[in-house]
Image 1 (tube, one colour):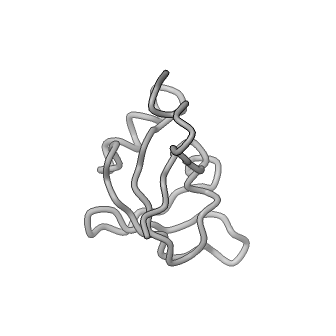
Image 2 (cartoon, rainbow, N blue to C red; image 1 turned 135 degrees about the horizontal axis):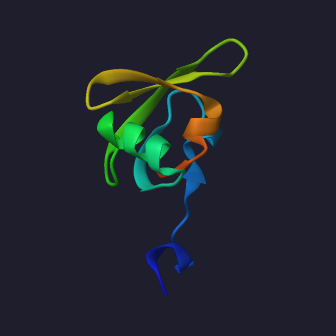
Length: 86
């Protein structure tokens, strides 16, 4: 049984979080280039982030990671699994 199969483990795609929510990255999916690009921006497993805001049409979204503002397309954010931090 992996950590993600554990019944208490609940993750959600980053793209489903609301403005102002904090989360911790638990996994990064996607293809090689996308995954590498996301990780080069400082988004690695265990990193906490804050969803700052969404654009008026809800794409892209802006997150704060390690003090930096990063904009992601919703389809890119959907590849990042997070757990909400209270």
